View 1 (cartoon, rainbow, N blue to C red):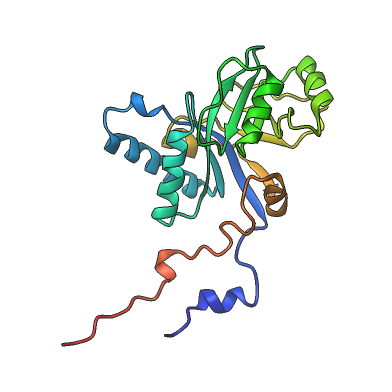
View 2: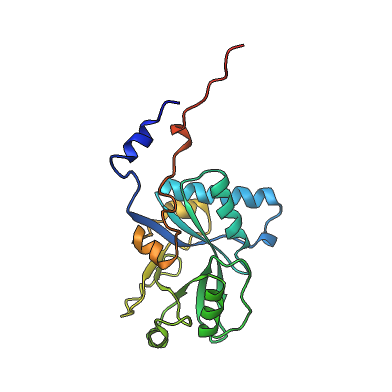
Length: 228
């Protein structure tokens, strides 16, 4: 079978970005909030499509109670061969008031845990944790935990919905997010984080080489049916 120009070009030069555009915080309602599965799927697809139009490479799909909707988005992107990586996530409020975004876990962690215990529980499930709503005191608290399983993996320093750039001296990977709640809101936002692909892989956000070999459907040669 004749090889496509895409396969040939990949042997000469990389067509994939080495620096990724990431929006770690896009809110989608929990499953129970939708009137039907078809409405939920349509909402998710419109958001993923908007993310691609915006030029994003990675999106965090967050709900309040669990990561279920995020995993549905993850599977949809895979099955429909969308050029977007999805981080399934949920928001979490610690017993001491800190707010976290927790990604890539299959089961919700127990409620009312302290920040260190919540991070520990998420990490035991293979999760990734972003700390949001930073204050100077909270920076001091997480600095003491740095390097341990009790610490978050990164921090959010700007959220377009709540506003207010957290210009704090914190030695953690930093993210900004749109906090969009709809496809239109996502397209209208100009907020995203630039992150080196290798760094994303080292942090555990992406699997090694994830998304590098994506081939758009329109580049796949069509096999003509034989004439009868």
